[in-house]
Image (cartoon, rainbow over all chains, first blue to last red; front, side, top):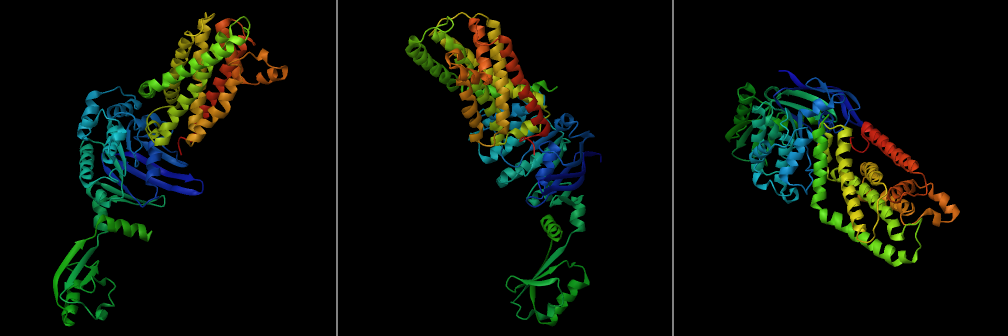
Length: 305
Length: 253
């Protein structure tokens, strides 16, 4: 798939702090790319550099082969941005605010288009209300509506579901999937790993200004997949000395459950542990195996870096 | 060129003016009326005419200039500072809008607002004094040039300001004294010789003097000098704005 955004050796320095450190990244056309990272990792700085809110100290960023610094009009024309905070002029009406966003991109007012977006985001009934009267969730939706007002080819969503309720989060996820179906490339930063797991085609992990990993989500999940098996015992295990040699085994739930990390159900290793339990006269009621989540993988990668 | 963006910013800012039109227009009209009552009628009646012009008429150009300058600065400074304050400036900065288009939108709206206020003050003055404008075209040119120039200056202040205190500090501590000491309410011929020389260092004096010339055909300094002064100040403001956008000073990180 063709790259739509090409980031090459981009660094951004604020005083002595290096917010981005030689970042190189390709975003493919039509994909949903989730950029994950802990607070202060550089996610927002990277988005800001692509969208023109900050200037990189070195390196180049191209959007469909246009340079973001020397050909900023061409690059910005293609981008819609939903920022992390709720930066809105509260005195303006919902409808006029969307038309304002559209006008900045050189487009004339379009009642049809703006009303369609407002209906999609359940804001149509609020179109004539002043923004300061909206709830936090509505303001979040309005920011998405404003970003879509000029029909962008690329949509940046910086923590789009931060602080919204479960129902609205699902609505926003649906909207993101709909935009993808329409061919819009989506770059998403999020703290909710579940969100990336649900939506993303590819995942990038950034930490301390460096991209530490970029992979297809499914590849990432299978490559870094670790199974965890829980063996629920009939009674509390008083003497766990027999399993001391095996570091993959630990006791949880006050000695009532054995936790086996990274042991495959079909392997001899599990069979030998079951045998060991029998030999020591330990009975169990249940064996349950779960796959680790993207969240576990993310935490492992960030902590081991 | 993204002309639509400049129009959009202009319309957005003018909509803000319409939302507050009552306080925007009524306050200057009431204050102007008070000036005319106090200075024109009460005190003015005790003052001899200045260069053949009654004192009430003499202060009209100064009053218009006073409002034109302060309103231009305040409107333009607020226009760019408020989106910075609430964070909504990100929209303009991430849109395909050049520095010229953004400046035309914000400064054009601020200059339009202050021009409307200036004209309202002129109309109000007609309720108290009668005067024929000797050079109406020059008057219009002066109003427009002053409104644009001081809106550019206000735009710079709005970008520079990082809090509400800084936003008002230059208009309050620098511009208002310069306007009052620039001959708004008196002719510098009325001052002792030393203070006459000091007044010549005040750039606002040249604007008020030139504007007064368009009303009465007489002034303390040649009209050409006044035009050179306003154009020079405009050029300096444009240069500073160009540098601000080039470097991203207090706009982009």
